[in-house]
Image (cartoon, rainbow, N blue to C red; front, side, top):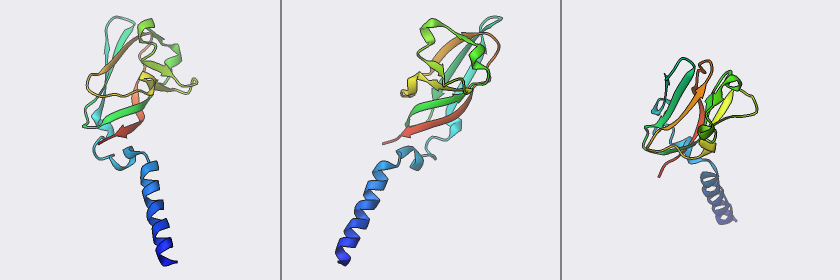
Length: 125
């Protein structure tokens, strides 16, 4: 009976390690400071925002804090790159897709929105 309990316990540990997102164990590889957000004013009312992952792992499901975003007008070509989540003041970048290598950039018009990193997931191999 002891062998059965040991096997069950080990199977449980393996299962838990597969279920827990890898990002939780790799936080040190991709701390928040590795996700760079740069915003520049391109005209009186237009802004360009670039978000870049500088860590060694792939980052995905990036959520940004975006207070007062509902007043901003995102250019039509960039609407798939940034969207507010249910008028919550939080935005989803790139439909939750990966952020690796090149920066993801979008433009909007209106008052400046103070974008900040909220949450993200990590895939590191």
